[in-house]
Length: 64
Image (cartoon, rainbow, N blue to C red; front, top):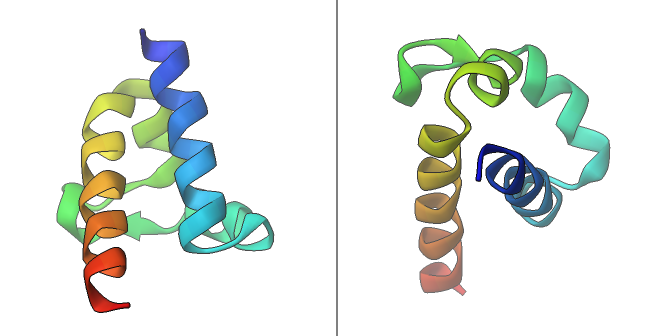
């Protein structure tokens, strides 16, 4: 399950910020997720990151 969450995180990141933005995301603290970096979240809590990304994706779809 964790592996699938990570894979889905990368897929959503590609849609939301583009594949070229993923390295910057991985090194940036995420305020909505206790200021952990994207890399820390993928390693320790990919489920929390996935929930956040799905929420962001839903917000983007609603704004289109």
